[in-house]
Length: 183
Image 1 (cartoon, rainbow, N blue to C red):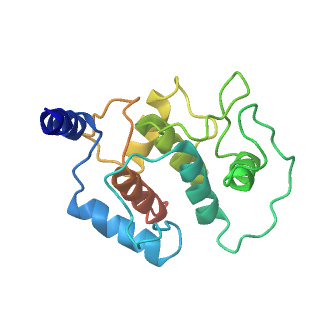
Image 2: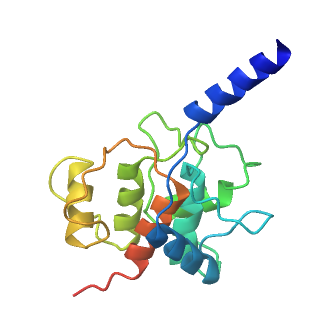
């Protein structure tokens, strides 16, 4: 009976856990980002591209893109109501705020450990490229349209705005962003 229960729990876990199929493009992008120091792997050397990625991790990646030498970024230390100074990404999130690429939520929170959505990643990447100012229309449609215009994502991309994205999907979007050439 115990074996049956353990087997059933295992089956339920396997079929209800969030897993993403990683594409060759995502693997390539992840490896390129790791090579240039933008994406860091885990202790075992893997990138775990199939896993969801959190808001604090994307903020950290964005800061690495804009501040590769880790220079001191001037500005206020932003106090988000739910981000403690002991949090490993506290400085990166504060730096991302000072760089104008993240803003947090209207209630003063940042939700650093929340999985990030497709629309949020696109917003951060468009802001990293300096093209998020003065966009017309409502969020997130305006940022998604801009990301398509910039070819950060394909013109026919129709993912749900609030879809939680994987580390691999994020790597592809970031790679497309940093290889984007302004005309």
